[in-house]
Amino acid sequence: MRKQSLARLIGSVAAGTLAAGMVAGCSGQNQVPSIGYAVDAVIASYNGGSTLGASSGSAAVFGRVLTGFFYTGPDGQQVADTDAGTAKEVPGEAQTVQYRLNPDGVYSDGVPTSCDDLVLAWAARSGRFTKPGDRGPAPLFDAANSAGYADIERVDCQPGSKDATVVFRPDRHFLPWRTLFTAGELMPAHVAARVANVPNVVSALQTGDPGAIQRLADFWNNGWAMSSGSLDLSRFPSSGPYRIESYSAKDGLVLVANERWWGNKPETGRIVVWPKTVDVQAKVTDNAVGVVDVGAGSVKDLNLDGFSVRTVPGRGVEQLVLGTGGVFGSVDARRAFALCVPRQALFDKLGKAKDAPKSGLGAAPLNSRIVQQDSLYYPAVTGAAEKYRGTDVPAATAALASFGAGKPTVRIGYLQPDERRAQTVAMIAEACKPAGLTVLDAGAADFTSAQLTEGKVDAVLASTASASGPAGSLAGIAATSALRTGSGLNFGRFGNGRYDAITDQLAADDNSTTTLNLLTEAENLLWSEMPSVPLFANPRIIAFGNGLQNGIAGPTQGGTGWNMDRWVLKR
Image (cartoon, rainbow, N blue to C red):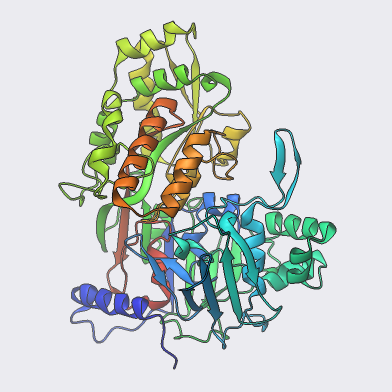
């Protein structure tokens, strides 16, 4: 048996040690052949690099189905997955990274993994292929963001080869390059080629064949969308230890061991993923769930007797993402609204995780959109947030009066059911009413963050990058990108050239003094322009059923299923 990623095996050993107490004296028990995993992501797209996939939380569902050169570990860090392949920076006039896919790598449909997959990912995410739009050229590919990919000049790849050399533009440098070509985002190019009728993806993209690229973009944007009960499984091959067997509202997303997986065989042959749209309490009561990873307080009266439960602060930022049109077309309106949002009270009642530390992540209201609370930079860059700590009715009233806004109505949308977010909206409505602001609960079971872009709501209540469930990482690419001009995840359509330039420089320069100055400028700018209102580190309830071994909480965009192939449940 080949060695699995060392980091993943170390994590499994550590988890086994931590969980040993739960199964002590259970030597007579039998291993359960299937484990249910309840996670408040939405199963909407297989393609984690697309706007739909990233905002719905596909990384927390498909991280062990579609592997990449790196994955998000349980602390939010990027971890190399050497089962998929290896990546290393090499000397050169420009930043250069050599990628080598595992020679034994093969999709579950029998087609070998190849550098074609990297070329497609780069082309789709780079933003270089465009079409005419209302505000100028618009990307052909509906990518979540182009961070890092836009800095790549070329991907050298012989079609079908296991090797690729990624060369960045001479004037660019991308320090967090380990966030490129990652788990859940490296898609099977051969499927796109077949369905789009493009014989050679690499050649079409390198030569700029407009017809072929349009067909590839159409498929990349829509061809991996997932709807309950009607999957053409030939479009969804796996490059990981699990593959999709079926998906329906009744039976959940059923993942089974991928017979062609070249790494360590999964410890449990079947995982059933229950997304946010299901009744979690009913599944727990029916004994259909062994692992739970949901927002704290989101499921009303959730009873987890028989589980080992922790409530921890996550890497995702619970926040209000504001539109930049309609009622919030004026920055003064956005500031006035922020002045009446009771951030401290919201944290005290809804945002404080039971197992949060006394300082750092989750210890207080979150005063930054792009800097983690446990970062050394955090205390120094968040001073501008102080005036927005709690409700200031006189200031909000004066701000509204100063530009003749009258008594505006703000519609806050979020994905239901979500008890905590319903309470959040209710508390904001109560706090803002004396200032003349009417706040309406626009939550819905079919809500999507795109409704903000469409003008159907005025704000989205969600986590980092408008995700409803697992979100956030140490690198913070999604958080930063969600406020960049033209980014797919920028649902509020905020645009500021200086902010874009700051984030470019932050990605290229690791000098601590420069970083401190840039982060301070960025946060001052964002508190002034108010494209969003950060509330708190998203608290997560993560629970493992009695008898569950090798589970490690992952309060990040990768979710607690980051090592689901190591889970063992004995009953």
